[in-house]
Length: 136
Image 1 (cartoon, rainbow, N blue to C red):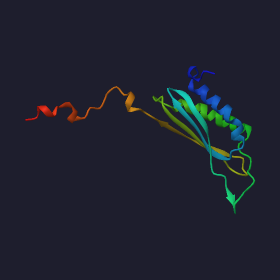
Image 2 (cartoon, one colour):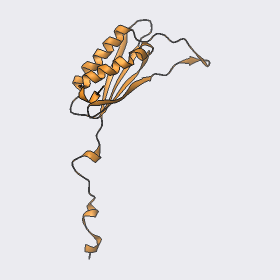
Image 3 (cartoon, helix red, strand yellow):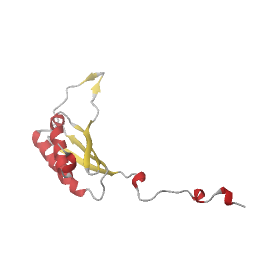
Image 4 (cartoon, helix red, strand yellow):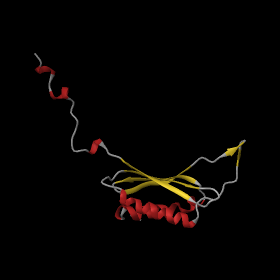
C-alpha cells in the first residue's frame, strides 16, 4: 500500500484500523502518529503504566469497546481538518476510559517540526565575511 498517494485523513483511518485490536485492551494511553511530507511514517500506542499492588499485577479491565474505537477513529479523522500549513510533525491522541461508567475521553495535540537545513537561507557568521588578512 502506497501511503504517499493517499490523503492524510485516509492514512489516519488506516492507522486506527491497524491499532483497533490493541485499543480493545487499553484503558488509557496515547496514540502517536509521526508525519513526514504529509505522510504517516511511524505510529503506535504508548500505554499508560500498568498498576500493581504489593508486586502483583491486578486483573486488567477491558479497554475501549468497538463503538468507542469507531468514535475515536472518526474523531481522529475529523481532527486532521484542524492541521494547518505544516507537513512534518507528530499528532498525539491522548485517551482514557472511565472504569464502571463506560465513558471515554480524548484530547488531541499537534506538534509541527521544521528543519533549518532545508530552509532557503544559510546562516553565515559575521566574522566569516571578512578576512583577517584585510585587518591593518
